[in-house]
Image (tube, rainbow, N blue to C red):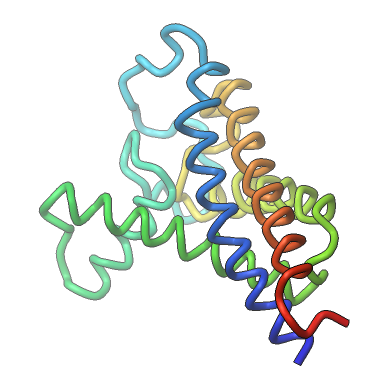
Length: 178
């Protein structure tokens, strides 16, 4: 029963962490990006580390690429509307955030917000800097500026803190705490 409780708390914490990550991208990332850093026209990835090649379109986020690829596999064609592409990207983003929160709850329990921050940093290192570029869903590490890497790290740290603080609060107010 405690494992189920921890997973549920982690799932909810993952949703709040995903919301915190979105707020980071909206409010903090533009301050760190600086003037003119985001004005470059997207180009094909010349820094790819993907054995199967680039699967994302120039300028397409990894969540948008994954959503598009899933849609193409299910429907047999590319999504035609920007609204569909946006919804697919958001669905992948939120799904990953919530499921990773559940994984965190199952692995560590809800009473360690510092562990959740470390978990967020670990997701950045493993997924954002490793597996996602290897799968061709985003540019290789050399295809981003240092500020881009720092911003993605900051976003994942915000995710981890949102996850951890929410899990801690829920652990204290929900019944069944050991």
